[in-house]
Length: 84
Image (cartoon, rainbow, N blue to C red; front, side):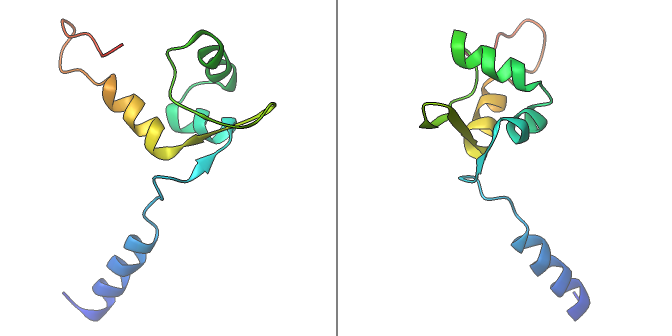
């Protein structure tokens, strides 16, 4: 591997997402490809990803929790049911 390739790899490593990064509703919705309203409904009714309640009117989502939520719902075929 040449020096230039090593530099590119190092830069990519620096850009790896922080799994504990807090995201607002809009950012979390973008990651999940859902609407902000869907996240709000899940928080109220249950069933959505875990979230951090920063204050009475402010919530955040950790990237790790969003990815865990996605992985819990990943199935190999239509006869499998995701974890509830």
